[in-house]
Image 1 (cartoon, helix red, strand yellow):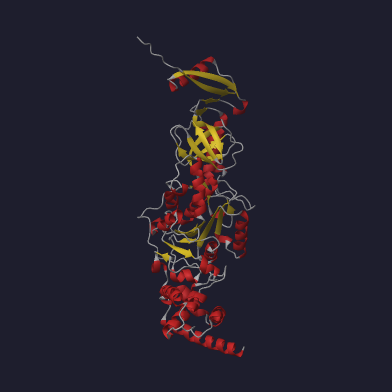
Image 2: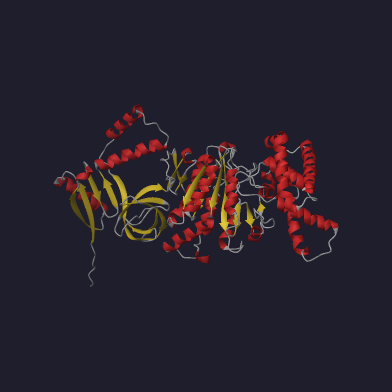
Length: 594
């Protein structure tokens, strides 16, 4: 007959104290531990610790029970911080009752904290043993105060990403759960500032006073809470406002190869929001710190930093911070949206964001899929971009308009990440390298660009002025290809080609000079009437400047009427064409004299 052998497990616990406990107290602690670990024996080590002030701290394998004065003090400090974040006023009248309540409610009930230990650390990734009840996205705190976020939950261990340097996080270091999801401070104080992905200022300015604290991961508004996109967000770029209008609450992708003017479009759009009651948030992911500094200085010179926040996760920062940066920026935008404000957020760029996430996933041991990206890379961007919307009046009526940027390789829009983001967004502005190097800036490809919101986000004045502009340009580009080797062309074809060249020249726009709605409507009205056909193509830009200057100086009421009503009346249209005819005849006369 075989004899059954049972293996006893030895559990270790440490009791820290200031005043040595009596034998009766020790016995009670051991009884408590025996009830907790009923599968083996318990070894209790007594350790004096004067820093506690008073009371006891009992440390088991995965939990800490705090009966100390130090622990109570920390709880009270946390309560004070919560009152501050709620916008509370810590006057003497409010502070004293709260302190009395904290003293009267003091009891020997322990504040319990679950702890684990670091198995390995490297490249911003920490593998942890012992946090059996940790949740995905929960913040954990290490011995040295460094924070991390749970990103992977396995059968035997937890994977976390670090929000700081890992030099003081070593194998065997203790790590504790907080029970809170990762969040970022928000408030009006962030306007005009440059902050990192955790909301800390990095521009050398004063400390920012936050008014709230929002989780970086937030469910997108439901269908019932949304309103259809109908109000335009003017970019100030005539090629976009006329052909691919963007509405408040829309998600319009800016896509193209490296160095084709993607960031320039985003910057001009920010500049154009001045005085239009729209806050802007620019999220820089994986960019050089020098580029972000230059961009910030440019916005500051143009007076745009007053309503703009820059969230920067530079190329030198670890992948975890690059990963959470766009989510943190969106949380800052949601603070304003839920207050009924309109917000423009730019993600520059989500290609680098996906690369940072791929690095994290591979280091966490997740299975690689297509192009080594993890299987949930689509969800990565969909849960981010779905948070951009326009809320209904019952929810405050605010909006977040998103302009994500994606970098392509040699114009390949069918690659993995570009196709993912194209399917999530409400349209895309495709910037073509060939057009850019030909001097057409912005280098918008008319055929591949689209806005799925369309005319719903356009003013009536812009609709009337733009007319068939997009079709005309598409036909011109096709016709230019087929007729480049033909010498015998009829008059209609020649005029169509000339009109196309003039329109392309008119749509060229220098960097940092967004146009007002009135200026765009005036120029498009003149161009679509084919009044510029007898004007030399190389003189179109010069004539454009003279025409707009004339209207600003002599007929400002026409521009004001278009801006305030959003309409182009027949009377104003007739005036625009009459004045344009006069200015053109004078301009051509001066050209002949020269």
